[in-house]
Image: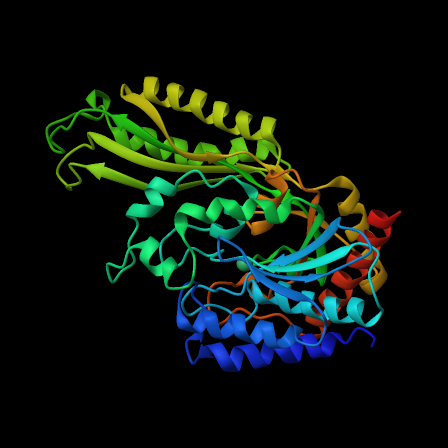
Length: 412
Ligand SMILES: [Zn+2]
C-alpha cells in the first residue's frame, strides 16, 4: 500500500465533521469531544498492527514493533482550543497515521515506529499548556500548582483528569515512554505569515524561541496637569513611552529574527488632570539564540536607565517568566530540508515563535525536528485557520520522506 496523502486530508475533513461545529474545532482536552477524537484516531489505526497504550499522563501511543527497540517517534496533539482551527495539532497526528499505514504495509520496520497524540497541548481548559509532553519529558515541576487549578465551572484539574483515567500524582511516570526514543518528528501548521509571504508550502523549523518576559515599573510624581511646568515634571509614562519605541532599534541591532513587544502600560493615577506617577509596562523579548536574547534584555535595561535619568523617574525590573531557546537536531534539520526539497523543490529554515510539544521532547535530549506547512493569512486558533489541500498533501509527503530518511539513519 503506497502513501496516499489525499486520504490523510480526507481523514482531517472527517474529523472536522465529527468534532467541530459552526464555530470551529471543539476538541478541548479532558472533554467528551476530545475522547471522540481519540476514538477516531484509534479506528484509523486499526488494521495497521500498531498497538495502543495510554500512558500515565494521558498521552495516546500507537506502537508498530520493529526489528529493534530503538524508536522513531512521530507526534502531534488531537486537542484544540475552543472554537479552534481544523488543522492545529491533528494535522501532525493524521499525517502520522498515513505514514504508519505506509510503513506497516511494507512489513516489519527496521526500528520501532511510534505515533503519539500528546494530552492537552493547548492547556485550554486549565491554562497549563504542553501537559502530556512535559510529563513525558520529565520537565513537569508544577504538580502542586496544578492540583489547585480549576476550570471556569470550578472543577479541579485532578478531578477532571481522573474522569479520563489520569492520576496527576503518577503523570511523571509517562517518562518511561521516551526511554528508547531515538528521534522525534512533528509536522505542524506554521500559524504565522512567513511561508505564505515567501510563497513556499513547507519549511524546516530550527527550534523554538527563547523568551524573556518582564514587568518594568516606572515611578515618577503625580502633579497637577495645569500648574506643573513642563520642565518640572517627573512623568513615568514619558519614560515608558521612550522604551516602547526604543525596543525597535534594539531588535534591529540584535537582528536575526529578534522580536520585542511592549504589550501593555498601566498608568496611575490614570486621570487626564495628572502627570503619570506610576507606569507598569510589560515587555516580551524573543530570540532563537541565547546570547542574542541576553543582549536584547541588557540593551533594553541600559536604555531604561538612560530614560529614567532623562525623565527623573525611578525604574525597576521584575521577571515574569522566561524560557531558554530550544534548538532542534542539526542532522534531522538536514534530513527535513532534503525531504522538503524532494517534494516541492525549495525549502526554507525558520524559527518557531509558539512553543510545541516538540520543544519538550527536545529538552529531554531526544533529537527532534519539526516541519511547518504554510498557514493561509497566518491565522490559527480560530475557525478561519486554513491551509490549501495541495499544501497539506505535500506536507504529508514530506513527513513520509523524512520518516524514511530517519528510519534509514537509525537502522544504519
Ligand atoms: Zn498545535
